[in-house]
Length: 395
View 1: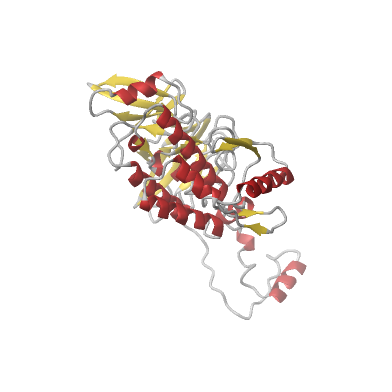
View 2: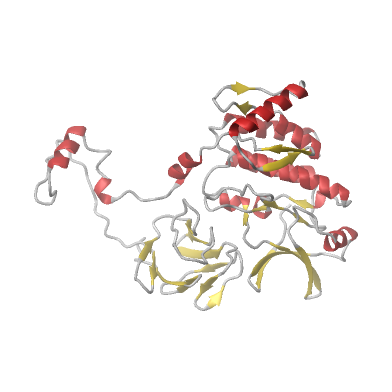
């Protein structure tokens, strides 16, 4: 069910390309001649005796890359399912076969804000249509739901219940847009004050009154539609963004704080009274073995100011998004710009569909292209230049 794709950067735009296996079909012509909301901008290219179907993914990131950093939230899940349902409805209007809708997490592209959450604007997801895609819509959807289930915030009970209900529905049938929205309509809403209320399919008038009151009390202004109705505000499962960002932010503990969780309280108090710990040390009744770190670790050295960025864990993400491993404050750096990963004794660099690209030794990497790093390699990042220092061989 894996789809063969290649990536291309041209005139400041990034594209994902699906190689065509045969002649151009009627459905491909349909999307070429029509602008379909939710579908990424489409174009066709003939190369090496083969058609390539390209989609503009500039500024977007695959869902799986965002969820490598932190769990999936309920609000994001609701947005994905709603936009999927709306796009399924549009596919029917344009006589498109939903079996050809690409739903692989690696190929489901989304727009993310600076904090790494799916944008709450008019469009958060980009969908692709591939006429040569194998398998059925039901198989693709079940695989996506299972992936969302694995990435979901386990503490969000309502989210887990919804995904279980959605998986059970997709196992019995191939749910259309109405079935997906029906699963969403059965989720439990939370009163602003904390009181819980279950909404059933019956009592639609009561439900509408309750929802109107809920949106009014929340005072939100965003407009979106479900089942053709426009409402003010948006329903959320529960936002633990601040907690998650603290939990998953990979910031090393400063050396002077390493003892804080090991020494007894009374020694902490004595330590606080000592003006200079180098001149006077507090004897500890229990000997704790501390091995000083002497080996070098891989690092990126900024060539202008000689600032070192130590690569103390992998994968190592660089971008302006809050919570990543390194966030350079420099205009032109994308939210999730590049990734450094380690396999065996080798470190690899990958451009993550960045807007301005990533350069390696004077050559610009293609979007999502992976290259091996060698000691002394020059990395260009939107005007910033780094030298890769591999460190000692023992690491």
